[in-house]
Length: 199
Length: 73
Image 1 (cartoon, rainbow over the protein chains, first blue to last red):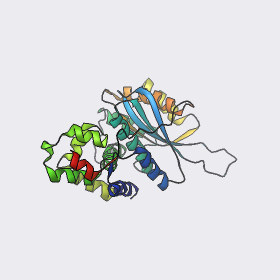
Image 2 (cartoon, rainbow over the protein chains, first blue to last red):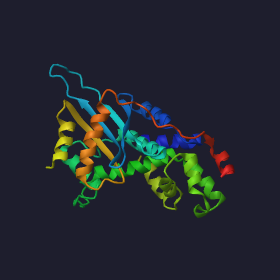
Image 3 (cartoon, chains in turn cyan, orange):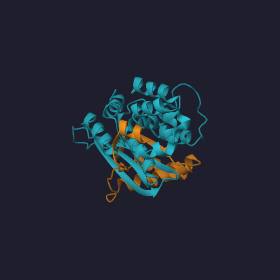
Image 4 (cartoon, rainbow over the protein chains, first blue to last red):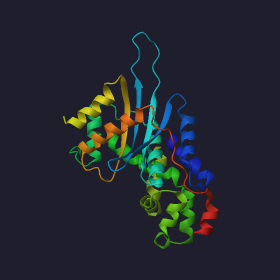
């Protein structure tokens, strides 16, 4: 329930923009036994906007201790700030991924890359694409954290979504306008409920 | 197996590190898995380098309460 708790935490505060630094604090409060590092990459976001990479070093043969996990949430700084915030938040919350949604074998890495770029022919509903599915869901989990639901409800209480200036909303929440459109759509409450129920 | 696939998998599995999880957020111009793997290899290498800054994205605007926003929009 960690991601749902973080979403609720920022909904209760009800102030925007939600700081990604505060999201990191919430994540670190849950995963006390893991190292979490954020990395700002000065490289193009054309091919990759960001990534999450969790690993541990191979234990020494004479050591009985299990080496600690290191999680890296990396994002390109060569993209608009709204995208940086969304991408960094999405990569941070992957720290809550556990088996079987982790991508940890060579075959899974290749299949994830193919699926993300539309090259995969694996369309069977037998769980082969579960790593890709949760990679996609994490975008919306990050969105639910950074765009408190109460703000959406208050805005829609004033006027319908088509009457709102989405660019102005994008400015106050500091998120890409495409994502503001998603939150203001009539499908968002259902998606958010699904995220909270499974988060 | 392609060259870029090989490079990425070598980085993830053969440098004394054990992969626990990897996820990507592809960019708008990533047209193939080959491109993704090539760029991922370079991006991960950069993130592991000692000089890579640990900087969190800024807020970008002054914080406001939902009530203040609703009255201003």
